[in-house]
Amino acid sequence: MDIRALIMGISFALIWASAFTSARIIVMDASPMAALVICQNALYLGLNFVAMQTVEASLATIVASTMPLVAAFSGWLVFRDHLSGQAIAGLVVGLIGVVVIMGARLSQGVDLYGLTLCVLSVLALTIATLSMRGASGGGNLMMVVGLQMLVGAAVLAVVAALTETIHVTLTRNLVLSMSYTILGPGLLATWLWFALVARIGTMRASVYHFLTPFFGVAIAAILLGEDLTLLDIAGVATITIGIVTVQRAQQKPSGG
Image (cartoon, rainbow, N blue to C red):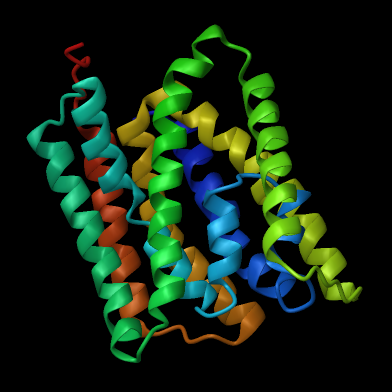
């Protein structure tokens, strides 16, 4: 098992999961699209910031964690990546863990518009991840990441101007959460993510998204007072088993 990749993956999942809570705090004092202009990830974080107005941070985190399945299937469909039986089993176990965590929350009722935006954000991140497989081949990863941030900011500036009445209430919480979102999830987590994809491949890297439900729910519970239950703990234990299973699977080269 690649210990360095394991540390990178867990660090990424923790920082990435915290973005949903910081986004929830930001949209309390600023219009979402305008706020994202100075962050990044036009579609993924942009859709999540808008969704955060009507759904809990914990629910958005859980939906985002389904990305490994979408990425693994897309990698097989587009690049003909081989998925061993053990890898598939690990993905299924991870998904079961996500379902355990998500079940009670859906039964309490959820805003369908916000949920739809969260699902679309997962598709956006999957496309970006698969695109980076080719774009990062030259080795200049930071340049590629920086360019996608600039493009994302430019797109969001136009969207914000056309669709929002921009408002900002300058508070300590807004300044702190915005600063953290830019430096943590925006810069560090994005670099970790694409470095992880380059190191261990899309499928193995994507499985770390299964950790985001527990981290996201735990952070939201601490900072926003959202619920943390025994089912959440049971779910993360199941997710951990799935991650270990996938990481130990032998991944054959893609067929094309």
